[in-house]
Image 1 (cartoon, rainbow, N blue to C red):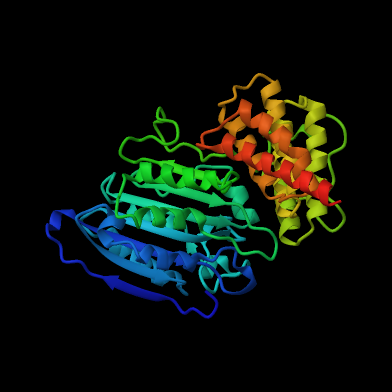
Image 2 (cartoon, rainbow, N blue to C red):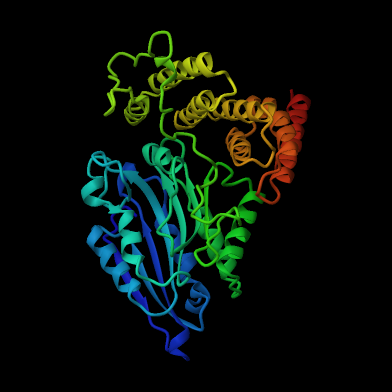
Length: 430
């Protein structure tokens, strides 16, 4: 990544039948330097080892590779050329998402992208939908493995994230990795590993197989999972008639229409040095304050704002209200951004327990999302005392809420058993 100037390579395959010739675009992009969240280009050698026909799922295929591009125009040129090809188009996209500071729109960060220059050096996400909108539904599939920074994570978990109704999308968006760490494109590497066998299942089945392998390894429980089939018009919920919201469900969605503090009592105040901006209707916008604090590394200040709004929402609407749970979810994410998986896990366990206690079904998306994220944060605790303390709670909750990931309960039970053995060994050695 660092020092890369971008590269393209075409691998022509002589078509046996032009009608079944597909096009594959392999795109991996991430910034150089300390702003890099994921080693995106590391997946390209694994994908390149797969035959073009298997990548595409057609008899023959043309493959175009774009590694660490420098300019948005370079990405647009390759995407536009691929979009006008007549056969099936498959895009394998690995990288990181960031929001521009003016319009707050998601962009794919490129090699020169920094937080201050996203609008000019990143690739706007809506350009993808614009370039693919004229393709026939069902002829285009995107496999995505994206890592989001804090602001982009808030954006993705609060709304539908797709590439247009006619484009099938499968993959995941992962939250930011721990500070000073670089994430791994585990989902895309798993997809590539499956395809290297030479067998090409349909896109939906390939996606599920990749998730199954990741789940067995305890990976990706806290991610936003993307699954939208443009042919059947269904996603994770087969009854959906429009692109469904991603799972897990929002943790940083828009503030309640009527801020709870406007009902009675003083309005929560931002910490010193953080001004609360005012929205178009005169209401406060605490989410902007929180995002600014996280970007500045002021995690305690961000949590203080969220805690005040959480307390106000509980007083106005009750602890089990959506208004209050929203702020508990916000604080869970803030703990993750601050590098405190124990506090994040406890917050997600609180959300899950409160929702179940309020009568929500174990298979309700909001319940499953909370348990998935608690599970993910627990696995980040290693063999610490917090991991041993929270393990029995996570496992018990997993037994009530097994979730959609095959093997999640089995993974939690095995991990708890391993922690018990470690504890026993420590006692013996002590």
